[in-house]
Image (tube, rainbow, N blue to C red; front, side, top):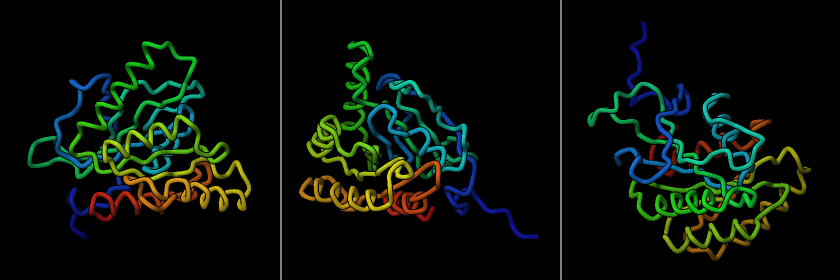
Length: 219
């Protein structure tokens, strides 16, 4: 009988993941320990759907047709770790509140914005932000504003196109090249764009590999 694999030996995306905490403000952040990768994007860009597809768990991150539903930093980790200092997960996925939703009350928008910006500037375990862009729309003004912030904060980020099944393959190729050219001179941008479709499963292995390289561990 084969020996059971330890937490350290099992592939990160080959095991169940769990939600551990929603963070409405900085004082509720988990203690720094595991490396973190975060997902940012405009409201309704498909962050929750992409996270669910990435870990193979349809109900992990809550999806909604209502823009602005995610109002906290939502933390997910691989299942099976005790949380003790000597048994922490090697990484956490962070689903960040969507931005650019004009219909939300201004005080809510201000609170979400402050939370996100404080997190980006002050989290030493944050290794990379994956900025999701809806392939039907491409980079918009509020996306550029977020990229400016990430550049200013010197936080590494990589652009991920979502919902590529909604446009034709030649348009995906063209948009990928155009997006790469637009970010080429940005100092904190990783110079490679990943095109994904949560619905079709396209680009997910590429994204998993990119995350593995980011945290320095096979996934």
